[in-house]
Image 1 (cartoon, rainbow, N blue to C red):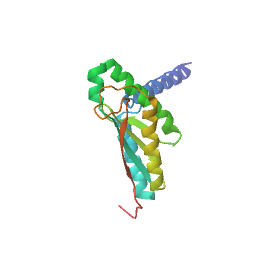
Image 2 (tube, one colour):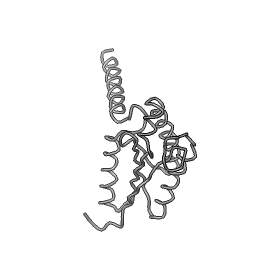
Image 3 (cartoon, rainbow, N blue to C red):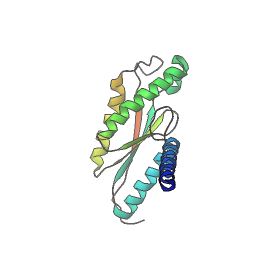
Image 4 (cartoon, rainbow, N blue to C red):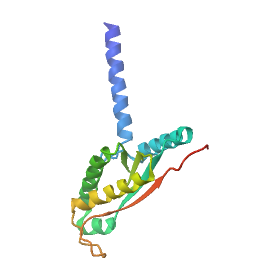
Length: 163
């Protein structure tokens, strides 16, 4: 009976530990991986690239004119905007077997394994158009656009022949 009870307690402690680990790696607003989790994943991708030449892309995404959005519509609406963008991008990134995390306030990062540079441009455009197609109103822009958009920058690994 004591052995069974100890086994149950050990299982519960393990589950609590895993739940705490997941909590420490998750952005509380969006539910995406947080910067800590993404940094670990980036390190793993980098090491795999160094050892085996496995190509990958890192894509930074910034919500355009977000401060203006937040100041005009309010912080609750700003949070809602970030959640909607995060959810749409997370769904889209799944199709590319990538990971997405919240990197900063209105910044996101995507990591994905890729073999060819041409794939990177396609993924970057898919990210850009996914957010634009949400058609979230943003009347405080001065560039003639009236919806939330993102700016996207990508870095792709080159052929690796050593450290």
